[in-house]
Length: 392
Picture 1 (cartoon, rainbow, N blue to C red):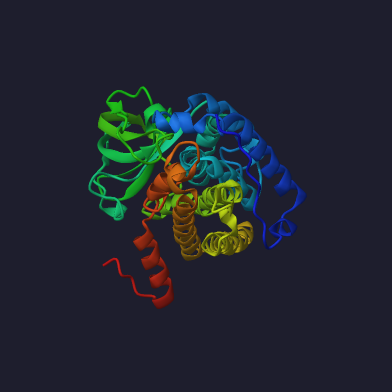
Picture 2: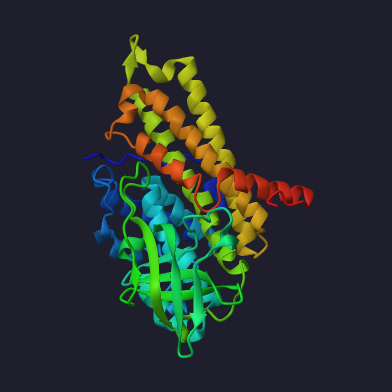
């Protein structure tokens, strides 16, 4: 069982930009991660199993919908606090952060933002505590980067809707109690609809044989003539703006979370380099090792500054989709590069479960693709620069 010796890198004294509340939230989540997650995460990843017993703890530390209002049982925190929580969770494992990200940004956020007051009061308190878990149904087998081409649909049957179709690559699907599903009505307009486990014709087969996010549960959502009550339609949004608004919130959390994975790889590499003796001295004393460590810390610091500023803009409700997109793309790519350099410093030990490096590296290969691939985010930035869409 690995001892968690993580120390937070803060080369530009970023803590001076945080409030005391921010730092208290960070220390609370970090202490919980070190006690409850770090000792078990390698074992669960090796077994490709999600540690479901941690759900209650995630609820208790406020990881589910932390920035949503307290009147619905949520944290009522600011956007930087939300980012810090995602950073601390992904510092342990991207799959654990994904579980919380999906619950807060992709399930609770649309219910709060686009739902009725009755829907908010029915679902949000139970989702905030972890009593209920949720998932988000957007991606389809034939429609990933082009969600507008979705074929999942529902028809008005008078006293209910009839839902048909399928979604895939859905985090939390195998155990979710609630699914926020995006589907087209008979006029071809996209709407959000809440599907509950137990509705006849609704199934969630699990996805197996993953090399990435092995400690996260992934599955499909299959709808075979599912009767959904009309009150389960999200009334305050239509069109792609709905799911894309959710993705903005989730991508913001990813931008913070990826820094956590990079920090963990850097911290492990630094400790290993100080302790590993070759040619009668620690390998930290060799120029090429110092080059790797210096570049890793530099890139982490740049990402910290980028994301902190984005958090300020989010708090002021001024962060644009393009700004969020840039941070997600940059920080995940940065984390992948840090993980690969850290693996080099660890040598052969870097591929073993004694160190977190290979697990982070494999996880980040999913993070760089989901919620907007690396290339799609480049094109979002390109469109923001030029005003010309490259998608058509």
